[in-house]
Length: 138
Image 1 (cartoon, helix red, strand yellow):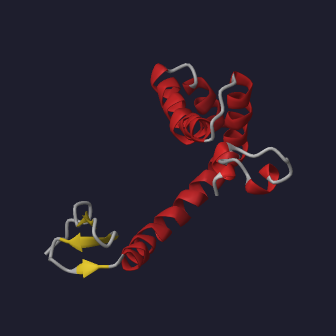
Image 2 (tube, helix red, strand yellow):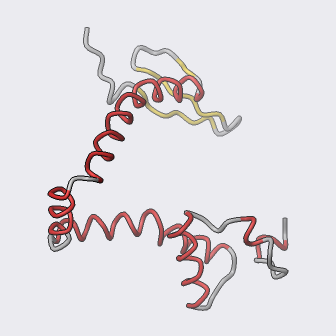
């Protein structure tokens, strides 16, 4: 019998003990660590092959030319905007709001940090005597 891997697990939450488990369709309960191991086993060979393709594309002038040309395509532009928003801007905006910032220049610095490093780096923040609202209460 062929398994339905896409719909094989669903998330269940237990609010009393705040433990999440995944349940396979056959009714087996597995822990998060078991689920991570299963997902890693499935995805690792795919990621290895994807890495090879990415490495090949890096040196493929025809591919790079097509990618540059795609920059004029509204679908590609929308995809790029979506990725920027979800990977950079939204996270920066959330951090900006949660830490009590109000000035546009602050948002610019925070967004740049998220763009360059994916977060506000703790070691860098510790170099400044000023603290954010969230640091005052922790």
